[in-house]
Amino acid sequence: MEKLPTGAYDQMDSAILALADDPRPPGCTRSSGCDDWRVGVGDYRIVYGIDDGRCVIEIVHVAHRRDFCRRG
Image (cartoon, rainbow, N blue to C red; front, side, top):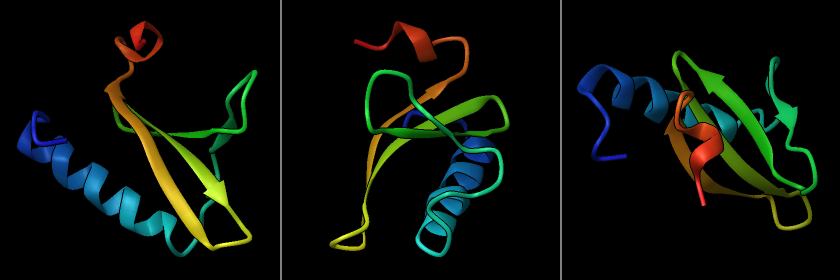
């Protein structure tokens, strides 16, 4: 996340912290083919996993939406 522009970093930081209170916010979707969830924040996407049993959220990937499908 340190490579994000300042404004985007602040938005992403707030969105990630908000996932602690609501791990399935309005607009989030389940990633196809896996158990990960994703949510859009402006032009960026957060991919994360939820472990309800342990009350843990694991951030898997953060990327600009144009690069989102190119991750590997």
